[in-house]
Amino acid sequence: MTLTSQNRYAIDPEAAKGFDTEALRRHFHVGDLFAPGEIRLVYTHYDRLILGSAVVDAAPLVLDHMAETGTPGFLDRREMGILCLADAGTVSVGGSRHEMAREEILYIGMGAGPITFETGRFYILSAPAHQSHPTRLIRHAEARRVELGAPETANERTIFQYLHPDVCDSCQLVMGITRFKAGSVWNTMPAHVHDRRMEAYLYFDIPEAQRVFHFMGQPQETRHMVIANEEAIISPPWSIHCGAGTSAYAFCWAMAGDNVDFTDMDMIAMEDLR
Image (cartoon, rainbow, N blue to C red; front, side, top):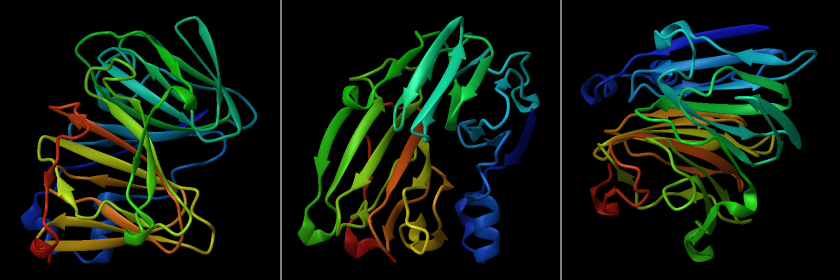
């Protein structure tokens, strides 16, 4: 098994103003995330969120230790959410085996022990935890469903909330999926920020010849990055985070920080964006 990891250090908004495209992508974009037979992890210094992947090939993959956490076991002081991106996948943890379908999320509480990815393809998110909550597999039908937007504004979409106070207990990790209806591409406009918590995005189900334009930066100093299928974005707390695609797409969003209330946003008026 191969485990690779990298650090992404926190960048302040004044520094980000001077970044060119290459520098923006080096600090905030995560490409080449999925590799057969590997676990790939990115340790961010935004609320200490870890994002990554596990792609099972010839043999199971075991995640037990990551040097950046400073603990003997990966989950000694952390919780985790795992999104299944394959049609089916199997994850074992704490003596239990979990058979997962596509777009189901497994929540794993602090102290659960090593995680074994037996089969499948997974997106991983982890945040520091202060207490242990029960491990739970959230089926797609169990997610809280929120319909938003309209065809007239090209933002008709469904939000599926999995790791959310109304669905599953967690310490600070909030996680879900947004999927667009055909003909809609915008999320979320008007834009917002939430300086109390960071956010990470994994864009997926983007057709091969299409792209998503992800917008970031302070409201009066915006920047953009062009994103292909199954690439991720690290969004600082001071930054807007919205996007528009050249076709419909989906993304997995996750937050860590002070507040697990999904609606805790500071809205930015359209006329204030620059």
